[in-house]
Length: 369
Image (tube, rainbow, N blue to C red):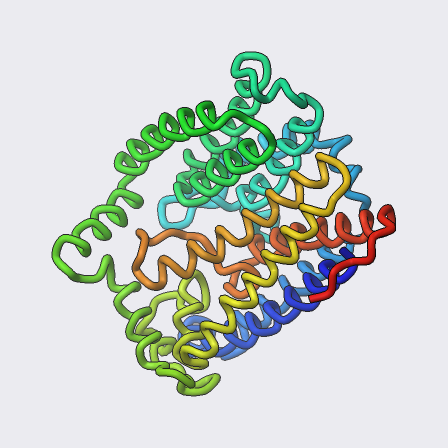
């Protein structure tokens, strides 16, 4: 697993570098318009990248067993922060998702995704076969999942709540829960989530726009339309880095959730396809670490972090392509956004530690790609 850990280091570093280039290219015009400097947003992104690298190094050096010991206390702390976010959080576009402490602004929901995975992995190991018993085991997992997802949904943040629930149920199923329990609960919570999404004006508009686009053969919204124009303009080889037209205020916030479209425009089909391959290799290396880990907690933790990362990437790309309704999910390591890049760096740091720790414990020679 030493090779897989090194692969994660190399590929996450590559994604960060590519992300910095894309953010600089995509944010330049808006940065000049908003801040009278082409470098403002880029410098902000680089600063967050540095914090992310430090976080990755710290978590890579911290034995992952520590998270098992303190998982419940960490989750109670996260719940407290989520409640404070609802009460005192910074409101932007009608949503209270951010905590502003002066030197940094962050989204607690991004950290909640990671540490819920940690706690679920700890519970799966601790409860063992009881996970197959609905009342004595499975129900306790649902309390934590429903609690965190509800607090995130109230912000409101439908897309993150969806990923939390989906990732959690996948972990439970792989961890030994009965398919009937997982599927039945998923359908029930999915129905509740769908009703909540239709009640909230912001998410309802996105869903109805997506449905109307299918029925009438149009685009869900202006952002998706401009994103597709960007992807189509790139052709096979792309127009070149820094030559994007859609980033010149045609595509709103092109440096954020829709940065994949700018990458496709500037680097073409070959660049977009290469980015997808990189994410698949990251996922493969992460799953290899999960499969070869000797203890149940490490296995479930590595699996959960792997699923969270690849789901985020696939959902972001699907939104850009107009395959699913528009969400606020970022492209891991690439999109502009401080908490996102830090959270994914923490995830990779934990995966690296799991890989190296189990490599030292094992006498098996790691498989080389």
